[in-house]
Length: 315
Length: 315
Figure: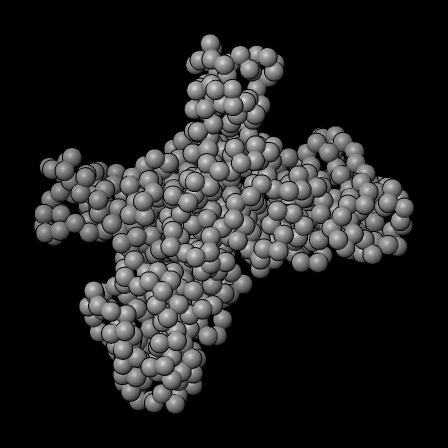
């Protein structure tokens, strides 16, 4: 038997057929094409599930269940997406509607939680009983795994790890608060910080590199730093300070076995992880503990959400 | 059968005999008298356990087990207190040593975690599956209950909830970091903030009240505020801002069913809780969730640790 994991994103919908070894046998995908009604999106999800199964040379007879990772608050008990800002979903009975369309049991979960489960069953946190996965993207996403299962609070809305204030009264966050970790440590924040440094230092190597690329990305400051630019170095140092401050908070709260960092910036590898780890080692409360959290980069990239979603009925 | 809970503090050691209804039938206590060797402290703990049982008109035959709440990192798997700054314990085999002295199974746990368990089985968070208990005292202590059990991370050092930075680069915290929640929201911090306001406004009603009392406590600014003093009001407003900022972080991370506030300042009741709740309601990420965290004052006071410790073998 195989399982289907669907990653329902604001840009793309991807369905993957996953086997018992957590390998993706085949995929099918389409654009989410927002804005459009939930019904049309669910029609596409069902179609992609069947297409992916056909692409794997299988039939729906071979499918045990379908799992969906969806942005927003997914009530896993009722199967209803209570609210998704990205998709403009309010009280959408995703589980029941998709079940009717595919004729298989359907499980739903918040997308960041599904990705954290994916990394825990098959990725960077494999084998860990307690793990935290943080994704540095447009925002700072988070997933909490406790005793091998997703922790999502009593109302399925927990693990909004990017929305902890680390600078009271600081930068405005999209969520309405001031000073959220997300406003300092997301890729979006790093790009904003890089642009500010370019404006302040138009003659720097950082500004040159940005001009050569024709745009500013989460990589620009790192590249300038590697090229010996002190302005690029300062941007990276400041970014790492904020990122590590929030990560140390997570260590002091959770003491997870594995703390896994995903998103484009995590591809910097040791350039990012080593100074972050040095900050955590200096600042964590558990200086005297024999066992310490392992920090690592996520391993599965965009497949984490599919693999995790395909495991929802198993956890 | 009854159970014994021992609250091992830096100032006092208290043993309580607890029945199946979580009522404390009798107590025995003595000063901790630090500094002294762990052996002497454990002798006293065993003596107090037996004394409390005698005070309840029972014998050790009636005792199922002994639970201990102890400050610091308590490895619940090995029964060893790995490190306790307050007690100057390093690698103390508390479970084995106390077991040898009382002839009953012994369970150990961090004191704040034990208190959180106490509030969850018999206090303000009774009946909640997921709860957070925050104690505002010398520091900001925390305990996390998930699925009715203490969550303490993979190395038993989790739930240092006071040691999350909420003001990056802010006030020096005793743990070595700058800007911890504890440095803004503990009773100690409120006293420091009150003293600073008195120094800056020596003619204020706040300064008068402090002079009348002969000292500054966590209550002074609240009393001045109640007496119409704008300086006292400003101290309370600022304190509540920092307290609520950290509590909102906790809601966004955990979405606990109950968030319970203990320590002397929690005796302010609605004067504290209402403005804190207004801040949380405005700032929480889960604005659209049907179910929301209930904020309340702790109910068991200093008995929470005893009642929780006496439940350690049951969770």
